[in-house]
Image (cartoon, rainbow, N blue to C red; front, side, top):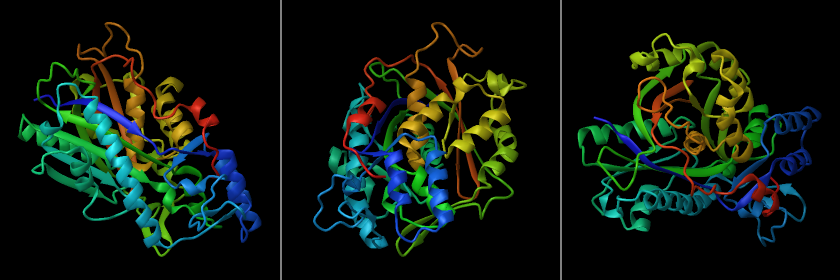
Length: 405
């Protein structure tokens, strides 16, 4: 049975974070050591990010909030709200992004009505509340109250793959199933000033965003498939448990992102790909570069550098990941779906396929705590979409509301 992804849409909050302004604000915080100040400059300038987005609208330098919790624009000081205060913002603002992305995905899927949705899978690692985002989407979109709801929480940057894998399994078990998958992350809720290198790196990389997809095995003539979901695999590297983690602290969630992570990926990426590529005989013996598209989660510039070099990929094959990082930052689980959307929007080579007559192959990877490597093979079966407005194009970002972080 072939399972199809029939829509994929993205959403970002309205406040734009300009990387150079963020660097200057973080570098000016009291309590930074000389080493900390140097790390801020190095991490922010070396992140290969121009713009990011945040759901915390008071992070703008033009904020007039009477009682700021995160940033005092009058003094330029970053504040340190407790975990409850941060999570309260998540409950309100994440609900908006979950609903917006879900609405866009369903509305973009001609031939699928809201009452057709049978399953809902939501994903987030940046906050908790209950009734949760799955409930909010059902109510917000007017879905049937009998929709089967599942939430994947606190898995990290790779969680879109377990969500899509679950969606494919539901469709294989019930050919009439229509699954809505929605990832939304508010990473910026947890930024803080610190001399700790991991915290500084997190503040330089992470951002907010959401993505949603409709997955089904149904024949839907009015909604041509974007791609097929072919195979998924999970691998745990033999080292790295202490190198990447996501913990709950008293002043928000705390990222552990060790500098050795790119080296772990460099050493183990080939082994992580082996079980995935073995699932498809047409790829036996093929060079990695022969696979047309690579949707790599841009956990950071150095990770992309290692992947490109180790697998012998071209600059063009890494462009979707690098441009996603440059324009949006690392939005945890939603990010790889932004990369896939970028690939789906690329012009098709008329009549071209990757040797099996099915379409253009996509190999995708995401990394997270553990160290966990999630991989997937997809097939792009349509060309560029003419009516796909970006959530906010980079050119628009420069003229949008200026922000600090």
